[in-house]
Every structure is written in C-alpha cells, then in structure tokens.
Amino acid sequence: MSPRQRSTAKDTPPGGKVLKAQIGKTWGRDRDVSYTTVLLSTLILLGCPLMVVLFLITCTHYQCSLEKPLYLLSVHGFFSLESYYLVILQKLPSFTWDGLKMYALWLGFQAVLYAVLPAKIGYGQRTPAGHVLPYKVNGLLAWFVTHTLFLVGAFYFNWWNASVIHDHWDALFVAANIYGYFLTFFVFAKAYVFPSHPEDRKFSGSFIYNLLMGIEMNPRFGKYWDFKLFHNGRPGIIAWTLINFSFAAALYNQIGYVTNSMILLNFLHAVYVLDFFYNEDWYLRTIDIAHDHFGFYLAWGDTVWLPWMYTIQSHYLLRNPIDLSIPYFLFVLTIGLSGYYIFRAVNYQKDIVRRTDGKCLIWGKPARFIKTHFITSDGKDHSSILLTSGYWGKRISRHFNYVGDLLISLAMCLACGFNHLLPYFYIIYMTILLVHRIYRDDARCRGKYGKYWIEYCNVVKWKLIPVREFFIIM
Ligand code: NDP
Image (tube, protein in one colour):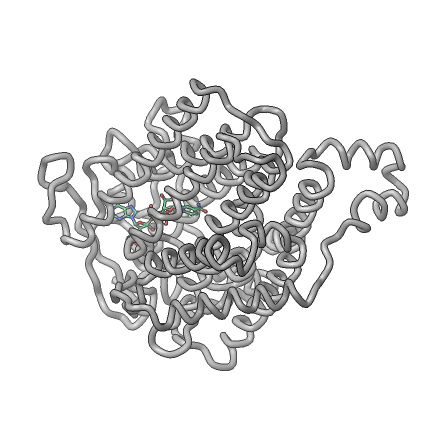
C-alpha cells in the first residue's frame, strides 16, 4: 500500500481532514504550503527577532516592565519617529569584539566537547526516506565539564567573574544573532550544494517557508556531527543553566545575597535541563529530531531564541528581586515537581515501549499497543507500535507529557510573583507551542500511519486534557 493509497477519504476520521501535503511520495513535513502559511512564516521570521530584542531592551533598560516603554512612547508620541529612537532604537544592544570572541570561544568549546568526549551511540527514529541515523550521546558529560570549568574558573582561579555572562549580555546577544543568521543561511545553501541525505530533503516551493522550517532534515558533517542535536543541546540547553547561574551571581553582586525566588527558578530550570541530558537518548525519538527539518526555526531558535527567551525569568528576578514566603515557595515547588513527575513518567512509558518493542510492563501490566505499518520513500515496509495503556491509554490522552511540561513551565513563572506580565511570557509561549505541536503531530502521524493512526485516535480520544467533550478542541 503506498502512502497515497493510505491517505484516502475512507481513512479520514469524521471531521478530520487529510492535508494535501501528506499525500505524495512520502510522509513528513509539509510540502504544499498555502499562502496563509507563507504569510505566517514571514510574520514569524520578522516577529520573533523583534520580540527578543524588545524583551531584552525592556529588561535591561526598563526593569522588565512592559508598561514603562509603552508609557514613554505615549508621552513622546506614538506617531513620532524620534520617540521610537529615544525609547527603543537608542538602546539597541551593540556589537563588541569581546562579545564576539566570547561567543566564538563558547561555541568552539562546545563543538570540541561534542566531538571528543566519550559518547554512547544512540539511534534516531526511521526517517521518511528510511534512514536510521546514529547520534553521539554525551550531553550529560558535556554539561558537567562545562559547569565545573565555569565554577572552577570563577571561584578558584578567578579567571572571570561568575556574572560574566550577564556582564556581556548585550554583546553576546549580537554575537549569537550573527551566528544564528549565518547558520540559517549556511544550512539553507548546504541543502542545495552538499546535502547529507538528499532523499530526506523537503522543498515546499516557498523560499520563506523553506528558510524558516528548513530543507534538510538531518544536516551533518561526517557520520556523527549532527547539526540538530548539537545546536539544540549545546549552545541552547547547556547555556540555559549557565546563564541562570550567571544572573544569580549578578544578583548577589547587586544586593549581597541570592533571593529564594532566584534559587527556586535556578532549581526548576536545572531539573528540566539535567533531565534532558540524562535522557538525551530519549530526545532522539521526539518530534524535534524525528520530524523537524533544520532551518531558521531551529538554527536561530536554538542559538538566540532559546538562550534569551527561556532565561527571561532570571533576568526579571535580577531586575526585580523578590523573596517568596515559605508556604508560597513550597506551593510553587510542589507544582513544579508534580509537573516534572508527570513529564518524566509519561515520556518514560513511550520510550520504554518503543525500546522493548512492547515487551514491558506499564503500570504493572503488560503494555497494550497497536501494531502499525508505514512505508518509507524507498518503498520498504516497516512496523512500529503505538502504546495504548498507562498515560497513553484511553482514559488519559495522546499528549499527557505536554501537561507535565506546562505545569513545570507554570511553576517557573509563578516563582517570579505577580507584579509583572513579562515572566509569564514563558507559559503563554509554551502553551501555543505545544498546542500547535498537537496538530502538527496529528498531521504527521496520520500521513505516516494512515488507518493505524485513525484506529489509535479512536481508542485514545483525548488530545491533551482528559476531561469533558468541550476540551476536545484542545
Ligand atoms: P512526543 O514525545 O509525544 O512525540 C510524539 C511522537 O511520538 C509522534 O510523532 C510519534 O512518532 C510518537 N508517538 C505518538 N504517540 C505514540 C504512542 N501512543 N506510542 C508510541 N509512540 C507514539 O512529543 P514531542 O517530541 O513534541 O515532545 C517530547 C517532550 O519534549 C514533551 O514532554 C514536550 O513537553 C517536550 N518539549 C519541550 C519543549 C521546550 O521548548 N521546552 C519543546 C518541545 C517539546 P513516531 O511514531 O513517528 O515515532
């Protein structure tokens, strides 16, 4: 049965729709994109960089208050160019050679760790063209080496101040952007000139969409140097805890101690980051690696968006130090750890059932699952399984792991108190990202598994929250 045959009207669930993009030589990322998608892609390409820079200026110059710059713009006049110059443009981060050197050193160091540290070899999911790629999994070791070196350099050798990242925050931002844009255009050109796996490229016919969502799925240097795994993990996620720590050190320099809100935030973020690296092999079976192609979304996203937007709360707590009451502290900690428990437990069940080919216990009973078939573009038939018990069973939902993630994200925001909106950006963003993912994943899995996915959706009806029919729209 060809993928085209699989995506027939017969297989379409009531109210569901098979996208044109899913019908073709192979499943995977969209190829036929609409004008609306191109328009939205353009908005993302322009809007995200603008948002990061505005948030940065807001935090650095207006104590992370969104109202202050708006108030000043209203005073100077919303329709006067001079007022935008005074309130925003004058405060744009500037380039410095020191910033560029620091960033280059950081990136080079991470690349060396990725290449030389001892690594386990993990394997990704089968790609639409049929490849099963090996990955070097050594992120946890790289995290420990990086953080140990940072602490020893700061506190034992006094090579730098622990607040060094905060102290060069603006200059690092400019340097990261230079690299993020370079990387975006480099991988775009590489996809045409020397692609790693030509059969796994997706051309949509829209330059904008190709630039944003990428053409190559797994651009690589050699057998192991994977752009996606490296950029998401190393300049992205390793930087996350290092940046937080540096902002905590800056807070100490500023007020003589570190507030419990900053400690709580550092702790919650560290749990999330360490979990990621402890389970790095699991990450190889997530949508980021198994589905997304490498364009601006991941290239600039991992190098600029992630380090600057995911750490906005520690920047906020530096500009607005808050001491939380002990009951409130424990309340937020409980939400965060409950979210983490759900996140890990749900992801674990999906991972173990795939690793053991269904020969495992889920909640003490043999796993229940649907045996599926799918075809890759080389024409070969493959089988896989979709878990239908435990957290992935009919009484829960198809994405309960996202509920755990949203609870952790909420706790990270709650750690910042209720004085400003800006720290709550993270939960708003994560909700949009994950709800959108539910639809992206549904389209992908319907294209890949056809009738088996529909059977699965008939068993596990809820998408996110297993409550009343009303919430099925989630
Ligand atoms: P999932 O880990 O849920 O992966 C979805 C994929 O898993 C599907 O495409 C399908 O792939 C497979 N799958 C779906 N249902 C089943 C099933 N019942 N049994 C077995 N396999 C199934 O989603 P994500 O990759 O989006 O997220 C992974 C985690 O990362 C989540 O916890 C999420 O919250 C988190 N995350 C965090 C982000 C952040 O920025 N902090 C961003 C994105 C995600 P196939 O069958 O092809 O293998």
